[in-house]
Image (cartoon, rainbow, N blue to C red; front, side):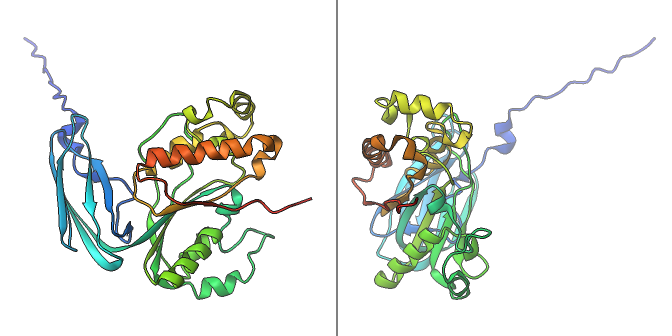
Length: 297
């Protein structure tokens, strides 16, 4: 008589093994939080998991992850200072260290914003070697959002916080770095910079679909562009929306050259984008500073 071995496979949902407290990558060691605010902090965990977030500056708050495991809460911050720690307790504990509190700015645009402090081949930045050599500053922290052109809205992003130094600063946006350096010198407080930029991108790529409703011709033209990162909404979906909610002081913007083909629409496009970002960020009408593109040829 032959006996057949019956093998039973136990199918276990990934939640049993993988679900645990996970923060957006914006929340990590060396980050800067906006001072004198109720900053948003969010992540994922097991559904219905109680979450407690505590800052060692003397404040804490709690919430419960929803049925999809997503959670968000507000945490009060004091005036500028640090370093501090942030303790997140859920299905596992996370301790974030070397956190500074000051001003946070979101910096976006095309190559004028993306160009690094070290410059590009045959495209130097004036006095960049000296700037890099003297860039050590514990009060300047930068988070570079990794390029991501997405046809669908995503809630995740990649990048990391770093402290300004000759090792890190060469790859910082030159525009964003000098802005941070100026503000830090004037205010004497920590400055956090979140950069989200892509050379050659059109403004339509940084706008959500509803804000482009009245620009059907611009959308059509952009959709036919051979460069995917110039298509409508793809950079908003992958590089702006996932950061919305991170409490900021304001935005600086350096873009426009890629829209020279429909320059007559740019004022209206810009107004719609600014209005949409302010509304969705949910922190009021924050400052939105922009540079006018210099004349060329």
